[in-house]
Length: 97
Image (cartoon, rainbow, N blue to C red; front, side):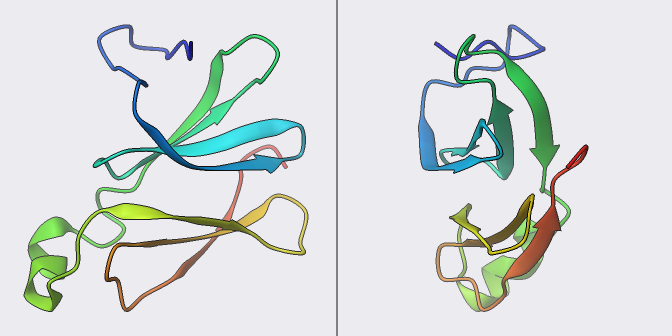
């Protein structure tokens, strides 16, 4: 069970899990959100909201859907994120890394 800061936000449908610097990074299915999870406690230690990264109203024009692609890179704490049918990929440096 993943424990988020706001108990009203669920984390039941996680997708695209990666292990980065001792933490699990996962996106919440059908949301533009990434969670950073302590695998020992299940506590969500950080959260990234990407709703403004490529806003839904803009991506609909390209028939693109939700954020759902997360990939580690060879750089410490750096991820690449993309989405379903996205023509774009974004480089992300995790906070505190």
